[in-house]
Length: 98
Image 1: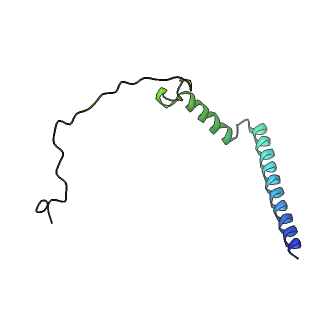
Image 2: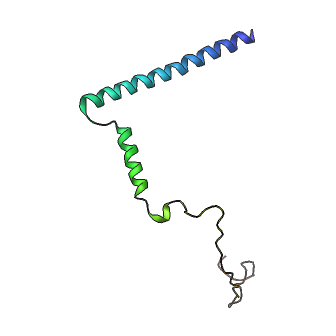
Image 3: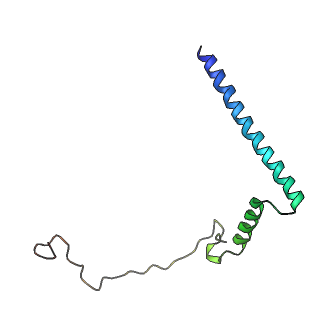
């Protein structure tokens, strides 16, 4: 009896998947048909082209690093000494508003 339920769920899943694929194909054909009739590109293509153009014009600091993975960049180490004593902690009695 369990195998019958599993078979039924598998069939329903396949019907759902095929329905989604068919709906996507129909929308794609309608989109291409309207593109051919009106001459206007579909909105998704316009959006993707604008995104590509935006990526090309991105600031240099936003682009990927040009360093190779094996390159080592040296940095100089500098010791910083404290010039002022540390501030007192908040646990001292009688200070601050209550």
